[in-house]
Image 1 (tube, rainbow, N blue to C red):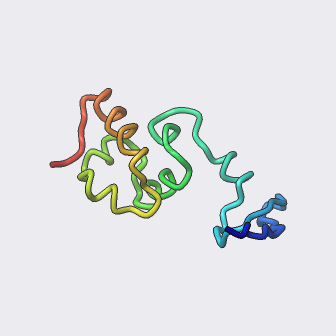
Image 2 (cartoon, rainbow, N blue to C red):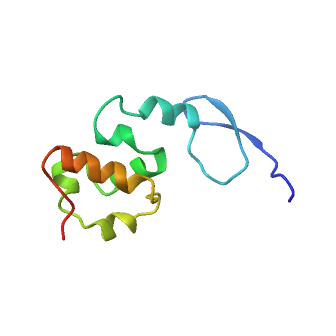
Length: 97
C-alpha cells in the first residue's frame, strides 16, 4: 500500500502543518478550540464539529435528538455514542426515543 504524500499547509492564523488528506482543518487551531470541560470535551474533534455544526451546545439540546439522528451526522462514530449517552445519563437525561 503506497503512503500518501503530505503537503505543507498554512492556515489563516499562520500555523504550518502537514496533511496527506483534503481535510482543511488546522490541527493547531483545532487543539486550541478543544473545550477543557463539558460533554464536548469528551469526544473527538470530528464528532465535536458535527454536533456544534448542528447548533447543539448543551446536553439539554442534545437530548432533543434521537441516537439515530446523531449517528447520521458526518463525523460521529460509534466511539462517541457511549460517551454522549454517559454524559446525558449523569444529568438525568437521555436521547429522544
